[in-house]
Image (cartoon, rainbow, N blue to C red):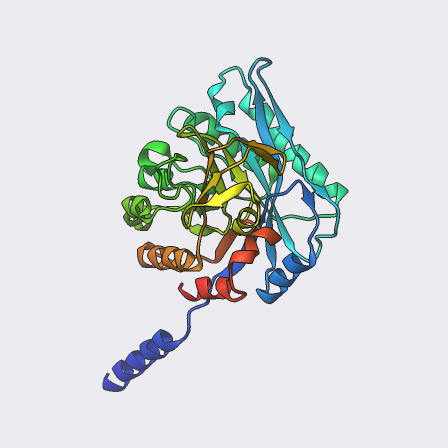
Length: 334
């Protein structure tokens, strides 16, 4: 008996000492043309990325005609066969508010379009991801869409999950999917006086404890993008992406007033956008320390480690603010 107990303790000790398997690194690809430049290819190679979550198209509602139609479909300009591809369909929640829309019909047409895109590009996918921020008003119709789509596609289905859907899952319900991806960004309100609408730890902390109670297996999606909030007369008039601090610093039409704020000192057009004198641009960005903080908070509050960490999104512009090892640093936390 003593020898058996000693063997059991030794086995448990050995298992405890074994390093846990770290999550895989994956990326979202959210452009309408799939074409990888050298820097993007280098990042994928350096991080041994095997899987890409590629936005295939959006589902949008023509309110007047009461019709759902796909917009901005993906066009593959370069081969993607070296990666496992997960098609992602972004579905506007507005669709499910229109009671005249036949959900089953939309689900079948969506599955068919994905099949046609895959066939045309020689892609054999095993998983499809549905991206929709459904609400209490739309939950029943969205859940119906998921059920029909799953049967029609005959694929493994994952779904994006927001923080409020985790905390209040008994009310918002859980779609019948194989797994979820928690979108750990876009937490706050886009406003002149908000701290950072992309990530706010104070907001996140209100939801984190709920993760351990959520029944669906979750992976985590973290943000690596930035943007400027365009403010005019103390009102937000737009979000300006793909605009860097370096661009504004060397532009004589803009004056840097603090770390995150620029003022327009002379009306001008930049990147096709008109900026009026005295307009304000407020930077919202995610630092390396933010990403590590997110990973630490999630690791502390999850009941099981994720199999993947997804970064949004794969774009050369987004890599300029990070050191090469940042993605490895993040997954090392789990």
